[in-house]
Length: 336
Image (tube, rainbow, N blue to C red; front, side, top):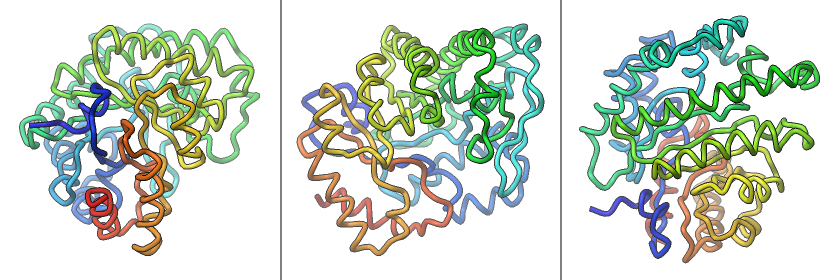
């Protein structure tokens, strides 16, 4: 059976528009909330193969989606590298002090042992989805993981970039080490049964322009080259780069680029060297009326007609999204 997402990434002659959504598993689904209420420790939930695999599959039991993304979190890498991570309601992740010695001394076996439940969950999901559905794994990019590592929380509020950047040697040391562990984590997820990988550089947009090459482009290029050598199809999502997206594509040469909601889709189609493009629709669109959803979605569908395009959002599904609106969006895509 034709795997729409996998073929969209690997076959330039592919016709059709596959669809999946970032954060399709979790937050907005009542069936997820039932599980979450009984499991307040988010990291433990991600590391429970039985529950995380069940959550991963919930969206495709409700929606006609082409992709299944494993329920996990980018900060599991920080956790596996010895930094304690706690998720607090209405606040987000809170990380303990980063200890450089512990980080540098972490062995691969120790790292993989902590993440083994993720690979077990992928195996479970692989055995319980349709043959035409592509299983997607993911990871955070080095810069984004470093930001959480050193800032110890989301940089969305009260973030001092100058304080973070004061030690260039330390930053480059961490980025290099993270690159190797990220590639190892991807490899093990693929071995477990995932077919493609998305790399989230969620905080690429806060990198100063004069640091983009060393802190964003080069670390992602190393991952991109690794994935190509392993013949692993991939999607890179450097959120917030604005028109530096073009330079990112030129330098990193990703298999596919995922655009956020600030990017003009027509400009992206013209500018990205004919590589597959994913996403763009503002998640807030799904809070609007069905007619407005149809109008906004149709804009993307028309722009990317006869182009290798994966329909997705410009970021994750919002927690207050009504599942009926997602059903309507999928119907709009399928009927186009």
